[in-house]
Length: 116
Image (cartoon, rainbow, N blue to C red; front, side):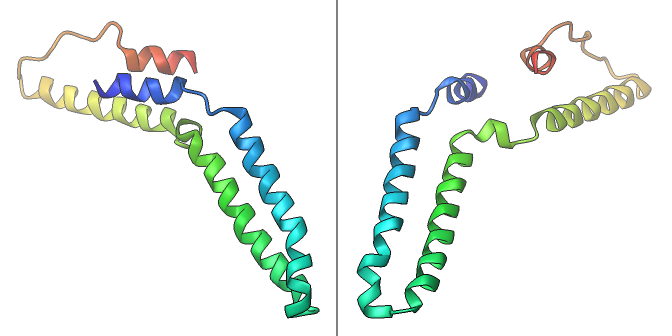
C-alpha cells in the first residue's frame, strides 16, 4: 500500500543526534581547514575557505531539507487540485448520463487534509 509507505516515511523521525553530529563535525573541519591551507595558499586561504564553506554548508542544508520531504511538498495544494479535477470528471460523467459512483463520505485523503 503506497499510502501506508508514505505514512511510515512521514512518521519516522530522523535522529537529532545524527543531524547535530554531522553539523558539528562539518563546522570543526571548516574551522581547522585554514591551518592546513595557510602554507600552500597564503592569502588565498580566505577565499578558498569561503568557497568550501558555502558549498559544504549548502549541501548540509539541502540534506536536512530532504530528510523531511513532506514538509517541503505543497501537499494541500496538490490534494486540492486532485479534488477539483475529480469534481470536474464527475460533473462531465453526470452530463453524459453515465452511471456515477456514490459520493465519498470519508477518505484518508480528506481526513489528512482536515487535520493539517
